[in-house]
Length: 183
Image 1 (spheres, helix red, strand yellow):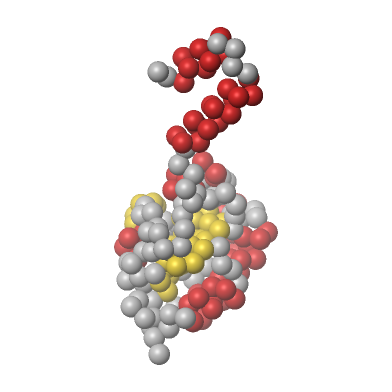
Image 2 (tube, helix red, strand yellow):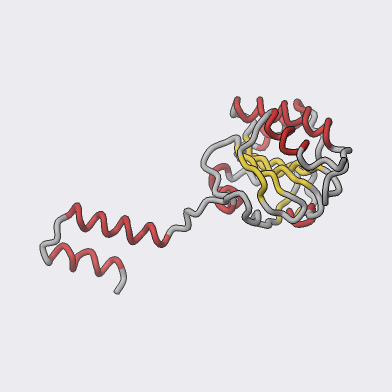
């Protein structure tokens, strides 16, 4: 029986509103996939257009350590994290890693205004090639697939695409990469 038919039936039988609402919320909770991505799980693969209009697929970076970072040009914590990430990337991009070829950064912006986004990218002189923005903001399918609720947010992936760390910033990214440098 559909939910639209169950509610009136419960109410007409004298079941209290609060109890009915609790049942509805419980029922709806089972319908919504709110399982967060955890360390050890496989990162969702996705396809997107890069800033330079080339096609991109996350799985194309398998074999390398990859930081997938969500940010916005209008968000001060995102910009601070972004600046530190530029330094980290420049430091680690040529290192050889255990079971991995190199270090990549994929930045996914939730900007909605192309002009604001383009100014930020030009101003920051980003050294990596993987810049993505579909200009859908919080409605982007990538936000949903990675279960993003706040920015900045990130996921460090191992060469197999598994999440080995998440929401690590500044020195934490460097520390995590240091653990995986080939000695």
